[in-house]
Image 1 (tube, rainbow, N blue to C red):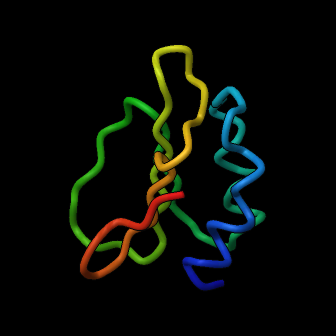
Image 2 (cartoon, rainbow, N blue to C red):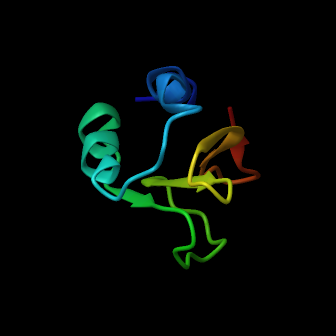
Length: 77
């Protein structure tokens, strides 16, 4: 699945509350093996399998805060 396809697949999560159980769902939906949740440590190294979810103080997933690792930059929706 390309990064653009991942972004489209996960767009329905924007505005919903993040819960750790979403990691498994995101992996299943995208085929990516590494999902990093809010407040979890992660390197900035390129990792083609990583999706990093960021949320506001209320753990609501925000527009432009779902990041997908790329060789040159992070994509966001």
